[in-house]
Image (cartoon, rainbow, N blue to C red; front, side, top):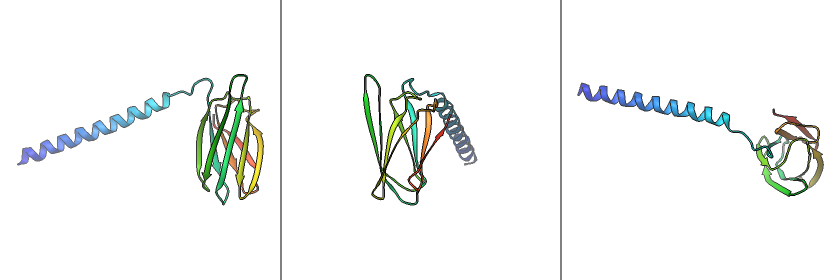
Length: 131
């Protein structure tokens, strides 16, 4: 019976080691993932006290036009979106909350491929580079 307990301990230790090693390798691999050259991440952060009903992002270039709509962003929620757009070209952003509509052009001065758009109660929008 003693050998059974010892073999269970060895098996448990081996399983734990496997899980830890797998997790480590997964984290290392995810750090190496790159965005395509024509893509950027836009994080929408609702810093308001009320939900945002709709955020619409529109952008384009000579060959394409894209519209992305995010719905029902709760207070404190961050919603990441990947858009098919190059940094520095800018994009139109429309936010609708509490029956009010705010429209701005953002991203023109940033060369970052990761930006955060922060929405405040006074309907202002702040842009922060994440890279």
